[in-house]
Length: 306
Image (cartoon, rainbow, N blue to C red; front, side, top):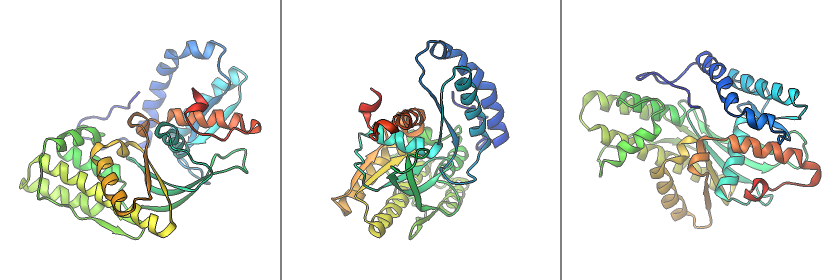
């Protein structure tokens, strides 16, 4: 159930999101009560925090995980807590058909709240963690999704603006407008490009479609350079793209063309469009995977949950 954001507003505060989740969750549980009562549940898994690091916290995850713990307790089932980012990584591995095979890989997490390039490897030593995750690159200011949403709202689009901005850009056959690309080593900045886009919108020099296309070019080239820098510095051979921004067709085509062109040994994997933004299947998959640790289950692929 997507949280509604009033037209012209650029997102929700944590308190607003917490309130809406608290309002919506009982309605969702009403829809799935036949599953809960059916006796087929083996465990309950939920996201408990944004990232698998100490003090990672957002109120909305506390709300969701508490509901999960109540269901688990009432049904005398184990509760498995994972993190939001782990869920995205697992959903990406599963839906893309990627085979990890114990090799470290680069995951590029791009969404409204995250712009991170992380090194990922399976964690075979812990009963509580599925991955060992290390941040290698990130945004120094605005997140990539914030950049898209702020410009999109300024263009009159609803929040979140990603899909509508992509459609708007698709109506533009080309533009000379270019927004600045700000990438230094493993850091990217989107505050400058956002300010430049807002100035262009205010002048009316370019059409809305041209501005939308310029945003797509900017995010695609920025992430291409950022990923290329990480590949050159750390020698990754596989790159997994996750998060809502990674579902953009223009973005995917641009990266495949420009990253593989510069390094034919690189393999790019993209989460299925649906699972780019919806990581619930990844959370469930990790819950199942952790329950089966003692049986030696370590494969995060489609076979595990067919």
